[in-house]
Length: 168
Length: 103
Image 1: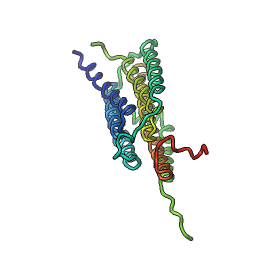
Image 2: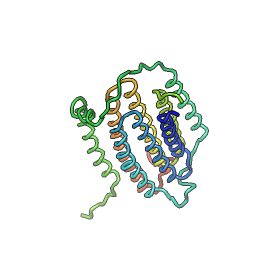
Image 3: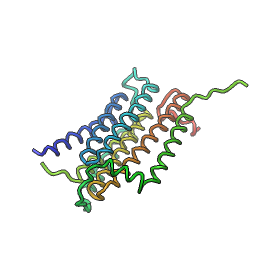
Image 4: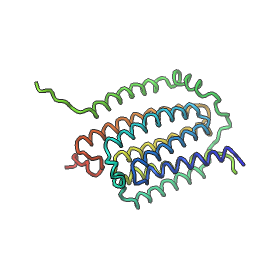
């Protein structure tokens, strides 16, 4: 019994079942819960790829930030009392067709392409290496990302606020 | 049971991407479309980290993944702000109802 492979299968199932319920559930709230399962599963897969810092970031940013934002948006906008109509789908036949074509094609490429694998061992303590990298090799993209975050913050507030016109 | 290889992760990521596209194409609720986009970004990110682990070596793939997570958070914040603005305007977030620009 290969424990590592068993854990991988469990995480992959959690990811894919969550993703399927995001795409197919009739209740928007269950879609959000599916997204939760999917994000936790992907975080676990990062751990299996020995990317511990990315996994923690995934948990903090996605589940602590994005998912809570999405839940707020659902509560504020959908008529969640009428559960069955809150999350309609149209054109499911075409959607399934696209799903099967895209995932079959990508899986085919993934399985048959001759990847040139590296024999290097994974970095043991990625937090140190990532900190060095972000303030060294990747300093410019890091700074641009922080400017982008400020712009996003201001933009989101400007878009979402209610305009109050003064009488004068 | 077989040993874990790059292809396992790539197949999971391909299916995740497919579900994301399915959600984006078929959903009428704008929030659900945004969730589909999050699935697609996660699939791409899983690919980046997996290639970084098995093909490139080192941490470049993980750095790229971190930047993608930052961009995804920014995209979600702006997207949900736009959805709230649309909701204040037409009291609905059905993507087939927001057709003011077409008329």
